[in-house]
Image 1 (cartoon, rainbow, N blue to C red):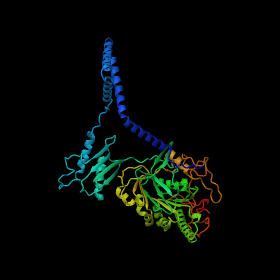
Image 2: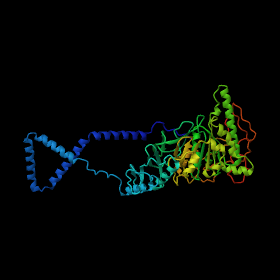
Image 3: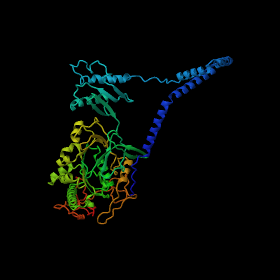
Image 4: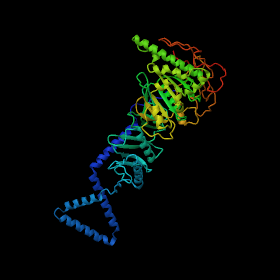
Length: 590
């Protein structure tokens, strides 16, 4: 499949056109300010001419001669008078200026009746929180005036608050989180539910600013983002929160959108990511987006799907995807190999540094370990008397940054307690998707969100925090399963265009593909992948986990034998039947 060229890093044509329009609008406003007197006089002359034409048209024909004689007499007298023409010109300009004045009625000061009623109701609701009986001159009192309490306010087209500045007394405990939460909850109820609000507390000036936030764009599909190696776009946020924008393509339109960029690699302070959310909130979509971006920059992927729903079947057999496991045996084998590979890389890098040589090339290629719902394997492992796959993540989590190994874990919010201590301690980059209360968000992210959470959200909507940074609103780009018929067709085609080509199996067996290099997204989901237009399905062979393996020495990396290769297994809960042995791509490339 041919790769599409990356878009230019420079500003696109839409941004240049917008800047040109802004410059032209500024120049026009400046010229209008300078030429305002001439514009007023010209408008007045036009109005006087129109009035003269109307008077001439209303005059009967038998009286028009007398009217012309009267006008001519006046002009003759003015011409014969000393300074008559000059005085007449001055009088004409004065009349034109008076007639050309702006007659637009001034905007009414203050809100209308509906807005005044809203402000009065909000003022009365705040009286119990912002008043004390000992205050001799209370700013808030029952039956008082709201003009001093609300110095600035704006309303939208529906008559609801769009912007509001609230003054509060100095003795209010604005430094306590509980006191702030009560005021924010009250303002959310009075300003209208179903919207997101940002509250900015100015303790020095005793001002609280309420701002209504516009919804984040939900129509951005997966595409090749203009990022450097080691940068991953988690989603998009408000333009006032970040100082960077990315040029994106939306159909034939191009626009700049502010992203939330997660940086990985040896110099990253948050090398691993944890994504939590409710079912259907978009955690699997986030993992697919991260996987496609990792493949774009030449990384190797090991994917473990604990849900067993086939969300990552589109990545099976792709170039750079080492394994896609959805069973306990394959998950243990794949994660055990990842731990050994991390140790091998650490040993190779250490030897190279001691000898004064650069690290080997095979240690510079990023290795990504993506786990979706690893808690589902904990119960199976406990029932089968085997180790929890999460215990194999301690080495990649602790030493993955130096070995260029990145771990991304996605789990449901109700299973947050099933995650191991190593996962919760070493995943400093956090993402929470879907509806959640402020207390839960604060406990997971380590800080409360800057906006009010809403009860209903679209898939992929949530919050993100990278390390000790601020909490950002987040909207994950639409990256659905391309084999899901219920998803949008345009979004599925965008994902198919980003998928790398399929690799040839290790034993030389060729897996045919459909014409065009990709499967038709509208094809049935139960077809065999080796037939034209069929959907890929994981292998059915159950591998034996490799035990007792030693870390490989520095130098060329050997290829694993057939018995050591982790393989894809069927979905959880189905009986495993012995079938014809199939070859799989090697986990380590020579």
